[in-house]
Image: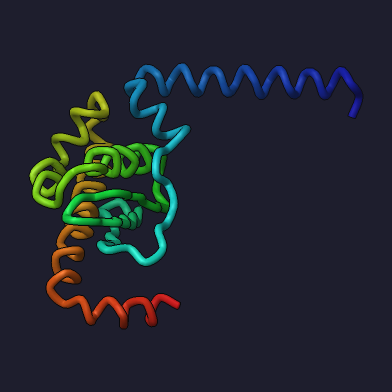
Length: 161
C-alpha cells in the first residue's frame, strides 16, 4: 500500500471510531463508558472467600470473587465474557461492595443501586445490571456458606486446580 492509502485508511478508522463514540455518548452515561473502556477490578482472584458464576438471560456469563477479612470485603473482582454494558455493571458491583461489611454489601447490592450509580441504562441493557447484582449476591451467599462449612473450602481449592 502507498503512503497516501495508509493515511486514508487511518483517517477513515479515526472518523469511524469517533462516530461510534458519539453514538455511545448519546445512549450511555459517562460512568458507563468509563467502566466499559477502563473496567475496575476486572480479573480473577485466587482462593476467594466468596465466589459465584451466573449466566444471564442474554447468554453473558459473569463471575464474582470476594476476599473478606473480619467480615469486611477487602477485595472484590469480576470476570465476564459479556458486552460492554455487562462489563460496566460488573465493575460497578465490585466498587459498591469494597470496604463494606458483609451485611452492608448485602443490603447495598441491587439492580437499582447499580443503575443509579451508573446514571441509568437503556431498557434493553437493564438485564446486565440484574446479572451483576445477582452474581454478587450469590458470591456473598457463597462466603456465608464457606464460613459455616470452612472444611469445604479445602475441597474447592483442589477442584479448581
